[in-house]
Structures are given as structure tokens and as C-alpha cells.
Image (cartoon, rainbow, N blue to C red; front, side, top):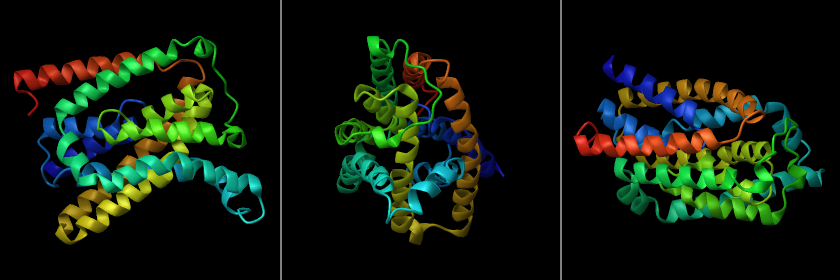
Length: 273
């Protein structure tokens, strides 16, 4: 029961933070350290439950995705949609596969998370203060047909930073999209769609490579975490879209800096190990 409670808390953290520019993996690493959750070796749990976020995107955008998948053979627009997703996903996917072990060994620690949160927060504040984003609120849905090859490539390059826990996959892709010229909402929704191939493939790869070492109780914890994460992620998508229709990401920038500072204080005091 103790592990189930911890999984529920960590799944809430994952679901709420996955699509916010604050790093869900970073929060999970710190959360697991605070809760002393050791039923599963890191980063198996932190990566696997991301499949819940993928399910949330599929459900939330099921109609749009159906329009982009069913006419794939006959629609140039549908093929372009997936070409942009593939182009923006390729850099981080390739580097993640090649350097997976090195990344997990070097960067999966609260110290790295704290530094990355602060750095990313400063980057968000810088981007939000660029003149072209001072009046960049829009409620119209993203027109993916207007995302250019150059924009998708730039988003993909910036998103490579997300390989470092604490930098945030969504935060990196959103900032990359805004720097590439997308409006705030367009950059955010494009980040949602990027979660499908990136989080889906990462979860599948981690599961396949660790399945033999997992017991039945551990598998149940993973499935519970994924289910709860999916529910919380689905709620977070709608709340975030409503939020950015009226506000900027400045509050998230300040939050990241404050969270990073608190983690450093926790490490210095011994509260976080």
C-alpha cells in the first residue's frame, strides 16, 4: 500500500507537469528522492508512465488525428503533418538512443535537475520578453500546414536539450517553436503532438529492455502509474490551453527558478538525497 500511495503521488506529478514547460522527468526524479520510492530502479518508472501522456494526447485530439491519419495516402496535407512531426522528433530520438546509458548515468540526479530548471526558467523569461510575444495570445487552433521545414528543424534542434532532466521536453519544444516564429498556442499544440512519437517510443524501448527484470508487482505499479498519469495528463492539456489563451509562460519561468533554488537548498540541508 505504501508503494501504491507513492505511485499515485508520482503519477499526479507526472500528469500535471508533462505538458507544462517545467520538466515532468525532473519533478519525478526529485519526487522519487523525497518519497524514497525504490520499488523500481530509476529511470524505468519515470520513463514508462509517460505512455499515459501519449494516451491523453490521442484521446484529446482523436478527431484531428483521425483527419490526419485516415486520408494519409491521398492527402498531401496529412503527409506534411507527419513529416513535420518526424523532422522535429528525429534529433532528440537519435541522440537519445545512441547516448541513452551515458545520459542516464550522468544527468539523472537532483543536482542536474535543479540547474536545468533554473537555466530553463531564465530562457523562458528571455523569450517571453521578446517584442513579438508581448501580444501573442490566440485561441484559434494550430494550422499545422503552416509549420515550415525550417521551423520543424529548429524545434527539433532545441528539443535536444530535453535529454537533460529538468530542461523539459515540452518547454524545449515550445521555446524552440516560439523562436522559430510560431505563436504561443501553435508552439504548445505542436509540442503535444511531438509527445506521441517521442514518449511512445521511449516507453516502448525502456519496457522491452527491462521487461525481463520486472516482477508482477512491479508491472502492476507501472500499469497503475501509466493509467493515473494518463488521466491527469488529459486534464492538464485542457487547463494549459485555457491558460495560455490569456497569459504568457512568464509564471512558469519564475516557478522553474524558484523550484531549482529550493531543490538546491534541499540538497544542501540533506532533505533531498
